[in-house]
Each structure stands twice: as structure tokens, then as C-alpha cells.
Length: 201
Image (cartoon, rainbow, N blue to C red; front, side, top):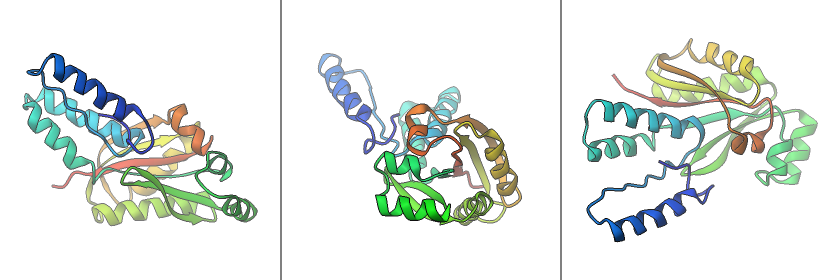
């Protein structure tokens, strides 16, 4: 299970290793899965794969379960500033300057393995409300959902998101996790958000 192949070379490297293994050990099953995501979206897939293995499911069913999660598992987060998105080449100079003047909070997600903008808000509270609304739209009011609240040195902000989201959803699994430096560098300290997937009935 690897982070999005559109943002990292790890998946391609793993595919090369898989090919070499199959050439030398053709009977050995090695499956490489592109999560098309990052952070705890990928983390949820790993956790559920491990749980399925502990249940005794065969590898083929575990892989199928993970692949079903890929389109449903989503990240939503907001940054405290546009500075780091601009420095990392994620937004243009004009957007950075305008956003900085207005002090807006960008909302970002991932679609098909690529970081995409999901709107802007004039305050953190409004950004968190937008995050909660998007989660509610995806899973339905009081829908069952698993959520990992993620942050970059901003645990209190992640807890604020939890308080807003859990008024609208039935959360059946919760994790708090700090963003890795490889991800946090793109949005900077103060980033807060969540990674979720609906679990149905």
C-alpha cells in the first residue's frame, strides 16, 4: 500500500521490485496497491487490511476490500496560511497574494491522487464548518463513518474540527495523528483536517 503514485515515486519503485520478485519467485504473491491518497487516508486502508488479515480473510479478499476503500476514503484539510502552498508550487503567485491580503483559509482535498482546491473560508471556524458539511454530504446526516483527525502542530484545532463534525455524524472509529514532515511541509504548521471513509450500516 503506497501513497499516491502521482505525488511520489515510491509506487513505481515498488512495482519494479514486484517485477524482479516475480522473475525470481513466480509462485510468490506480491501485490502493489496505489492508494491514490496520502496521510491517514492511506493509513485507514492499511489498518483495515490488517484487521481483515487478523480475521483470517485470504489475500485476494483483503486486496479487494482495500481497493473498494480507495474511491471512498477522502482527505479534507485547511492551512493557516497560503504561504507554504505557494512555496511548494501548489498555488500561483496571484492566488497567494490575494489570499494573503484577505487572510483566507484554503480548503484542500485529493481527487484521483492529485491535490485539489475545495474552496476558501474567511476564518478557521468557517473552514471547519465547510469540512463538516462536506463530510455530512458524503456520508449522510448521522451516517456511520471512521475519521482520523490530522494536524501539523495543531492538536487543539483538530479537536475543534472533531467537535463540529461529531454533532452531524455517527463516528464509529476515531484517530488523532500528526501529519508527517513530508506532508506538513506543503501546508505548514497550523494545518488541521481529517481523513474519513463511510462504513455504511
